Structures are given as C-alpha cells and as structure tokens.
Image 1 (cartoon, rainbow, N blue to C red):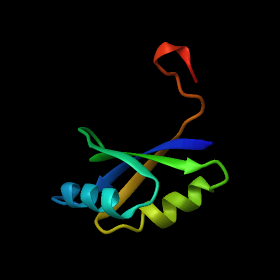
Image 2: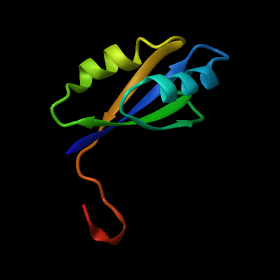
Image 3: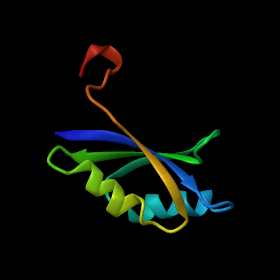
Length: 86
C-alpha cells in the first residue's frame, strides 16, 4: 500500500525546468511533476510506502535538490477514482 503526497516546489529564478528534470530523473518514488502558475513553480506527486516517514523523505530527498528554494507538502488520505473504486 502506498501513500500519495504532493509537494509544491518554489525554484530559484530561471531554474524550474532544470529542477523538474532533476526530480523526475533522480528522486525515488516520483510519479509526476507539473509546472504551475502562482506562488510555486512545480507540483510533484510522490507515491511513498506506508511505512516511510514523509517528513524525512521531503527534507532529505526533495528539499536538498539543487535550485529548490521552498516546498509545501500536501499529505493525502483516500483516493476517489472513476467508477467508485478506492
């Protein structure tokens, strides 16, 4: 069983594409990265094993990547899927 988390990422100016490529290529458990408008530059989705500590994962695996200035993490609970299956 996995836990989905979403991490909004604020990048150093001019580095959003570099950060997105780096996260996709080098951060374990990433499933998707989107560019976004607004306060944050990217939104990354990670699928973590239930037993993994989310805070440790974000601080060690995401926040330490080059050109990342700030993150905001959203922890999810139950998914709602088409067809009513969870």
